[in-house]
Length: 261
View 1: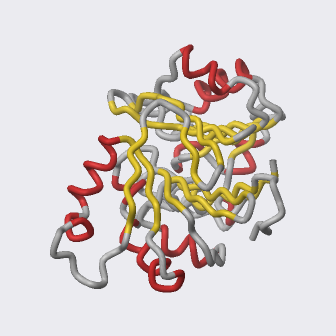
View 2: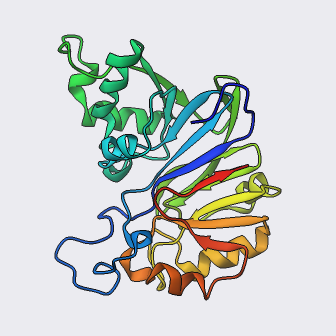
């Protein structure tokens, strides 16, 4: 874990798979049957550690396993990109941090996301909520930069077909998932990032996600020092084979990958 006097940003990919994960249940394709651990993908999420604080962007249905796998002992906030189940379904497991750390956990997201979370988890927010429910403090965000424990997050507004999704820039790191469109205005906010993470669902075009080719084109235009593709389905192909065909500065992310920025 990042130490309190370390101001470098540590990024850990908790999950890099699409909404049904990889391997897919019942699938016998080469990717789903692969023995390479890089081809095993939990639902997409990332953890940021800086200045002794720990933030998670999205907590999907694999959140509990991801926290155990990475031996996470502290959590300061969860920041949400959007309200789809593969990005919010692990919210109940935050209560373990409530118990052990004896504190509420801050959650951040647009008003639309916060309203959806309250609808999906009514027992958390009910006036008569039961003792074991997660203890959360809601912080609605908009397009303006905001700070969490003195760390600035710059929202990047993108579209997931017609659904608004928020990516985030923290210093020289930009993270965007579940996007199929980024306006020129929002691309300007990303420019200059040393490391960019962008979703790439499959090789063919998709109505609500960038394809690998589309993501590569955007990243080539932005020209960061390094870039990683995430939210990957089994249709992308085998990890090593795909990496061998990508531009040198772009790699497939994988579960457990860590970066220091």
